Structures are given as structure tokens and as C-alpha cells.
Image (cartoon, rainbow, N blue to C red; front, side, top):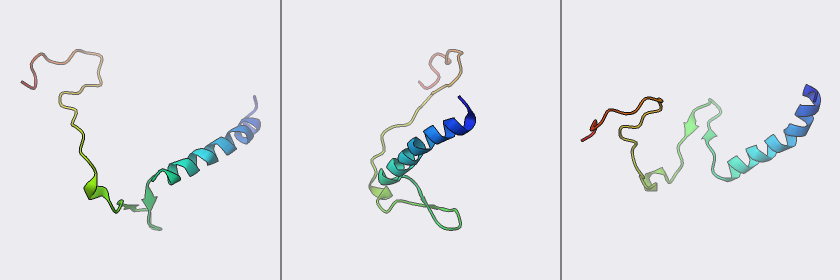
Length: 66
């Protein structure tokens, strides 16, 4: 499949995805490019921290957080 044809097929999908992200409360920015914090961010519920998380293939140290 050629690149222009791929772009023609993907453009509507990308536009729909961008619109859905904005409608779902995606990030908003000032004209200067700074992130605008949501008005209700102080009411958000904290879920958890990833203590001793590792993204390596090696096993974590036994008893590291105990």
C-alpha cells in the first residue's frame, strides 16, 4: 500500500481519535503551550504507588521493600 493511500485511509481515524480524546477530558494547553490543570484535580482519588516496580527482565531483589 502506498504512503499517500495509507494517509488517506488513516486520516479520518486519527481525527476521530483526537476528537474522542478531547471529549474525554484530554489535556488542554494555553496558547503559549503550558498545560492547564483540570479544575477538579484536587478531588481526584489516589490509587497506589508502584513500590519495587522493575521494568527489567532480571528478577527483583528478594525482600527489598520489607
